[in-house]
Length: 423
Length: 87
Image 1 (cartoon, rainbow over the protein chains, first blue to last red):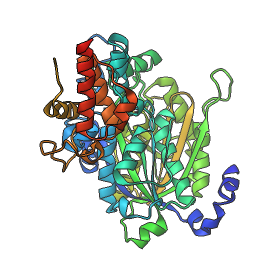
Image 2 (cartoon, chains in turn yellow, purple; image 1 turned 30 degrees about the horizontal axis):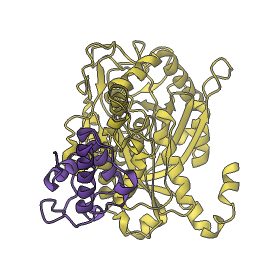
Image 3 (spheres, rainbow over the protein chains, first blue to last red; image 1 turned 180 degrees about the horizontal axis):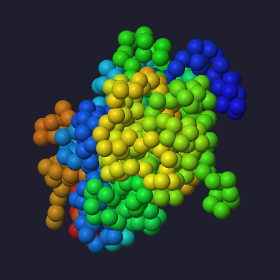
Image 4 (cartoon, rainbow over the protein chains, first blue to last red; image 1 turned 30 degrees about the vertical axis):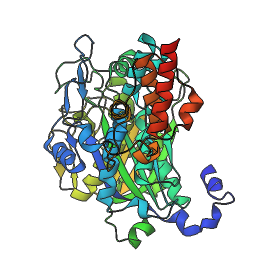
């Protein structure tokens, strides 16, 4: 594999074999989601089956064909973000800063006290600070360039969340940003794991996304897969025969990923190990060959050294769109057999959070392993005939021993990612 | 003729770039460098853009860069305002 040669390039081998082989463990989790601000509030809501999908309030959506979204409720940015940052940040960055702070606090680590280049930030973003960008473009178009904020130079940018988290917590080590839509939340964690293997001791990773402004809304509408239902309970139904598109949402999760050695040395509490990760890319439409999501799953299991029969639960991408749901159900049943593994898509309660979605599912998988419970897919009462899945619906499922979870994510444009977490 | 006073500048800085915690903008800050007040070059740039718009004046970019304290910055702006008034 090319990954091996990359790791053995000059200048990297010097860090010793231990850094390259020590597992990557999650020691901190921060969450901001439409059904809960903060990891504990969100997870409790998920287990109650409480949805955060509601009529849009961020802007007047009454004239648009779609009017439901998953907005983070009760988030007053001024309560969390310093005044100096308010004028230079989009909603997505404000949410990210709060989430990163929670994750680091949860991990019990003062990142700034680590050796100067030991800690970094790798996040994913699908649209950057879209709402900020809309406001400045409107100012440019209607009033002229003198009215565009100097902060537009970076406030819109994909890497802005990574940058602001890095500055805020003094994370000067290897950092970056991944842009692969919904798959990005997992791709970031995969990249963070690579940085640990190259010698970093801690990486804040995952994704928080938000673009609930008219410009972002227009982009969703243009793609034509958004749900136009007005019934919050029936608008987003992954794997249902009644699936009618997805509801967009905002939020996500950020994780503190550490080398197991570093975590052990400081006596950190560990949620689980990111044991496997893989990404694939779909062939061009019409080129044949179909979805490569199943291949991503197999490669991630292989990377983790895990057999399909050792997987206890799958967190599905759950597009909520018939063709994509069918393709995912086929990918899962090809690997695990029809009805061969419990499957869930708790994003039915949040909507699809773009890059934040994959990361939030990873957080859900880790909490599932901790609490030995599989959260339900709400709304969907039973999977469609052509989706032969053991879908957990209605209420959380307990009883089975959960040690290994597979998380799947697909990003608009052909991105597939899969991650394996183990207790 | 309009003049920009320190209190006006502080109001604009707060509006354009917020306020650093632990900094007393209402104290004697005329000779305190912007950097120590928590305002980086971008914050000053943003504020300058606002002043140029509100007062319909064009400021010399290099001179703005070199104005490290509110006193020097205000002198620069008020000179530009009076020059414009004299035309």
